[in-house]
Structure formats: structure tokens, C-alpha cells
Length: 394
Image (cartoon, rainbow, N blue to C red; front, side, top):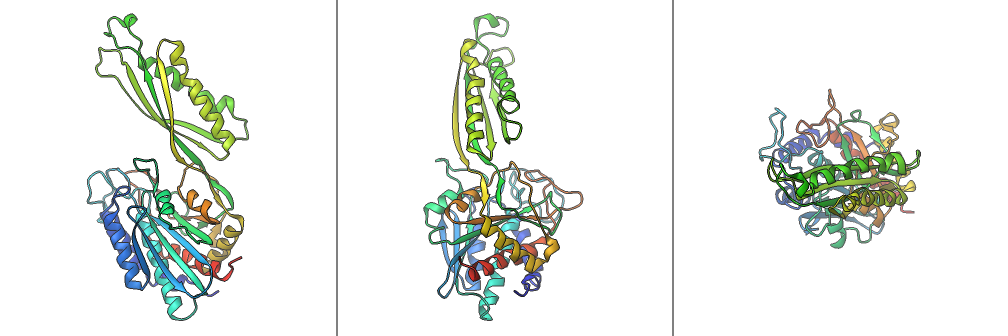
């Protein structure tokens, strides 16, 4: 296949402008109305069939081209509740909200891929079949019912009939321009949890009259540190992290209630089950010490597992369009991604595209940013995956 990169590179300045516009106007999960409108307008301008309001604020665009397989490409759209610290001219104009994970880049890349595929169709070089684009809301969090954007789009039929699906994530910590592609589990499953510890309030000068919920919580937190170190085999991977602790009302009053929130991350269901049991056991100490604890497991994502055949196809497609030296294996990471849910609906491959500046930036950080030269490469890579998948439906 002729490399698609020159066609994508011709769009580079347009994709950078789009990414910067989205970066200036970030929107939180399930509030991506402007972003969705921009994506829908771009797709209509290219002649794609567009459906809006999918999964609440998502957009689905299709390019039918005769009888053949249905191949999907996905980009997430939501930003994070973080105050941007960057000094560049395209910094966020929304107080307390920024694109700190690259989803603005993902939307721009998918728009670029659509333009490349449209041009192929116009030249009658696009294989028979249909390409479906999923501009997905709310990858970063879940709604009030515990459903993420991928879940909501699946419920609205976005994955119906899909033969293969591809996704891409820019990596601000990875060497720029390198596509990292590996089969099997590449990102962890994640389960959220909430622990509510109950004690009995008393004056701080008379602690013997109460049961300090902060002390009970501290015992539980320390016991959690043994969950991985002493209850998982050395060759098993898992993480139990507590991210927030809230409790107490005054410095001279024993806390009667403490709330803790965290996540469990895993690649194997057995590991998930062990860590959930140890979480329960860690906070059972509150009952022994005169209080109580309620542990609630919340929604989460399964591990993201790249289908072997689809991943081999993606590796060949990206190598064809960006070069063999632009493809490298990906080392599995403990971060979670709700693309995992889409990849359970159809064979999928999730690609990490290096986009590091010098020095590299961290995801979910107020100073996050990327090397924008990778936008055209990402567009070419996703377009190539779609073309290869249309040509090899089995």
C-alpha cells in the first residue's frame, strides 16, 4: 500500500489549528457539546453520514463504500478538572479545566484520518466496506449510574456490526513519532472503591469517651500496604491505591466519620479478587477497635486486551505508512482505558503514539503538552489501519 503519510502531512497545519482550538475550549466528561459540534461539522463537511447525541454527547460518522466489512476508529473527547499552568498561547480559556491527557489531539487525529480516507474514496482507492468513526465522550470518568462514555455509546448501538476497531492515544512520556503496538493485555483493569469508616465523636481533651475514626482509617490504610506485598505472588501484577481521605470537623473534636476513595488495578481477575478481599480485611480492623467500616466497590474498566490478529494488522499498516523504524513494542502499564469495553465488542487494537516534548510532560499534570508534529502521523496511522482492515476482513 502506498504510504498515506504524505496526504496526512499536507493537513498538518490544519490539524494543529484544530487541536489548539479544542485545547483552548476544553469540556468535562459528558459536557462535550462544543467539541462534538466541531467534530460533527468537520465530518459533514467531508461528506460523511453523521449521527449526534450518541452515548449522550458522542458523535458517530460513517463513510459507506460498497459491500464489505465495517471498521471503526475511535477518539475520546473529554478534558480534566485541572487548572492549566502552561504559558503557551493556546492555553485553556476555561478556569479549572484543561486537556491534560491529549484528547484534543485524538479528536484532531481522527478528523485527519477521515480526510485521508475521504480523499482515497474520491480517487476510488478505498477498499469496499464502511468506516465508522466514534467521537466518544467521557473516557476519564463515569456518569451518575457508573457508566463511562464507551458504555453509553455501546448502549446506543455505536458498535453494532463492527468487525474490527482501532484506537490511538498520544503518549507525552514516549519518544515522539514512534507507534507502540503490542498484542495481549497492554493496560490494566481498574475498579474504584469507597470506604466509609465510622467512629464516635468526642472532645479531643477526652479521647477515651469516643472512637477516633481517623485512627481507625489509619490502621486500615497501613493494612492495605500488605495487600500487594504479602498476598500476591511475585510474578503477579496489581496495585491498590487510596487517593483521597476526608474526615473530621475541627482540630479539637475526634472524627466520627472518614471517607476514603481509591482504585484497584490488575491484569488478571484472580488478582482483582485477592485485592478486593484484602481491602475488605484491612478495614475490618475498625470493628475490632470499636468502630465499623463499609467498603463499596464501584464501577471500573476491564483490562485492555489487544486482539492478536488485529494487532498484527495494525502493526503492518503503521509500518507501511510511517516506516518499520516507527513501530516498537509496548510495555504494559497500570493505567486504565475504557477502549477496553469497545475491544470486548469487536476485535480491537489500541496504539500508543509517542509525542514527548523535551523535557517530556506528564499526563494529568497542569503542565501537560505534546509534540504536535505527531498529529499527521496519527492520522495516517489510523487511516492505514482502516484500509488494511477493509482489505483483510477475515
